[in-house]
Image 1 (tube, rainbow, N blue to C red):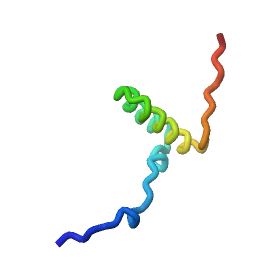
Image 2: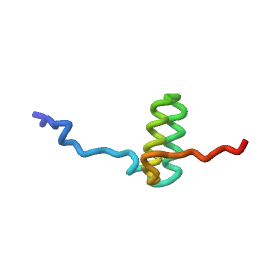
Image 3: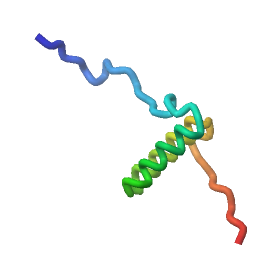
Image 4: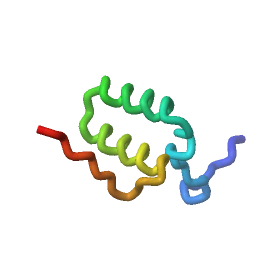
Amino acid sequence: MTEKIRVTELPNFDPAEYLKYDTDMATCLSVVIEEGDAGELAHALGVAARARGNAPLVRLPKRNS
């Protein structure tokens, strides 16, 4: 018989802990961009920011026009 596990008993999962290198973040963001979901892209950018220690708000650099 299989044992049931309650959701509240599961450990927290933070994908930012697995993005250790810039290449990991670039790969993750590339996949999300290819999928074309703006909401997922926003989430992935937040995860990447947390991985770099820039959470909770990331400011994009100003473009020279």
